Length: 148
Figure 1 (cartoon, one colour):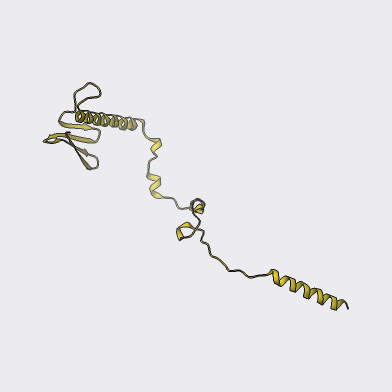
Figure 2 (cartoon, rainbow, N blue to C red):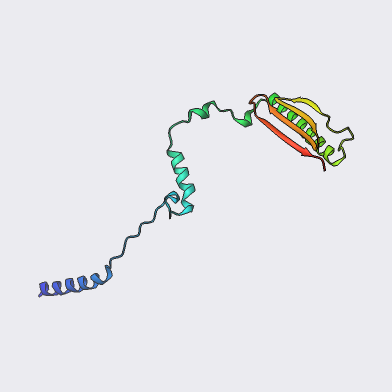
């Protein structure tokens, strides 16, 4: 009798359990946003995880200088050069629009040396041309400003 009741209870449990165990389709969803379809919010976490696991040192990083630990004298020189180039630009604008901002005369034709820059100002028939040469790299820029 107990075996019969045990069998009936087991059949009822199996019968009820078969309805709860339904199958579903598997859906692949990539985690990395670079692989298309991945969640873009995972990018920061994936990047920080990769950087934390990176144990290889960059050889170029050891030789690079930190811009925040720059020599004060070098910083002063760069600041001075920027101010002189700013004055030059101010005079160019003053020449172009017929006024000088500081009461001095406008920019005169000729060659100027500012730090590692060689500046050549040449008047032309429709305005003037400014050729700026970085003597440390050899890069050149030419600006032509026409008269209005």
